[in-house]
Amino acid sequence: MNLTRTSAPENAPSVSVADAATDGGSRRSMWRTLPDLLLRIGICVSVAISGYTHFDLYRGGYRYIHLIGPSFLLQAAASFALAVLLLLGGPLTLRIAAGGLSVGALAAFVLSRTVGIFGFTEIGWEPAPKAAVSVAAEFATVLLCVVSILIHLRALRRSQMSRAGGVNRFPQPSPPNRTRAGA
Image 1 (tube, rainbow, N blue to C red):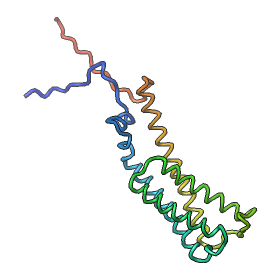
Image 2 (image 1 turned 90 degrees about the horizontal axis):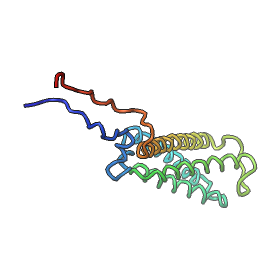
Image 3 (image 1 turned 180 degrees about the horizontal axis):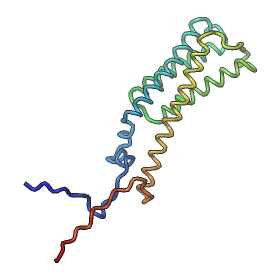
Image 4 (image 1 turned 180 degrees about the vertical axis):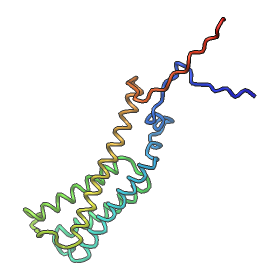
């Protein structure tokens, strides 16, 4: 039995981690890594917390405020839907949507405490602690979505660079040149 170690041929293309993740006809395999799973779970939890907070405020009396009540219910429904879809492994566009939903909620929070929104204004962090919980969850969602999107774009860029013949940051060592002495 011959157990000699062989290496790739000299003309074989080097393959980066991003290429390996996108080869095989599907980029979805790239999203099945542990860091991505943790990011998705974090986004799901923060979006669900924001949705629950808005639903709880809706039940607690905001439903009687014209345009604000239905907006809180819509925010809760969209948050729960995004959380479930992201947990199931939805595409990158769902992460962008979750980040956008949270940015919109934060903007509405700021407006409601400054100039008002649809004629509705609030003061400070009332209703406490729900306002603070909601803001913290929305900031967490935005942060996690930005990190997730940047990781995706970085992997995509590496993949495109290696396909276009760009510089490989992790070159494969070349096989040793084996010549026979006296041949």
